[in-house]
Image: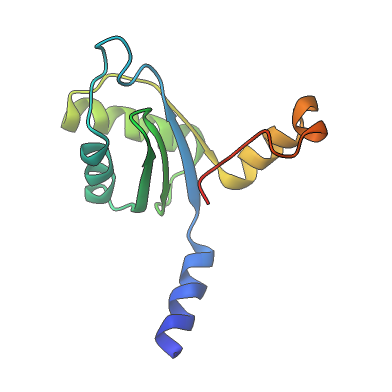
Length: 117
């Protein structure tokens, strides 16, 4: 029981990131298997990497970098380790919730957005 509690406490402290990769698996460019993308993130030290379909949209946890520093780090590493040249747009869950809160349509229809649950 204590180990489970410690794991939950640790998990609450770990930052969750949402990443949107530009032009991945679109029109024959930026092709990459989502399993390879998840494995790559794990090798970089992130945990709980999840993808959505073949979109290049990711949710993952961990790391000490945030914002532009994390985007630049992942862009560099993707080019170096995966041969993937693309832009990363990364936000924390809190930042994404703030974006959604400012969308007028989202306020009217609470079901507009769906992020991994």
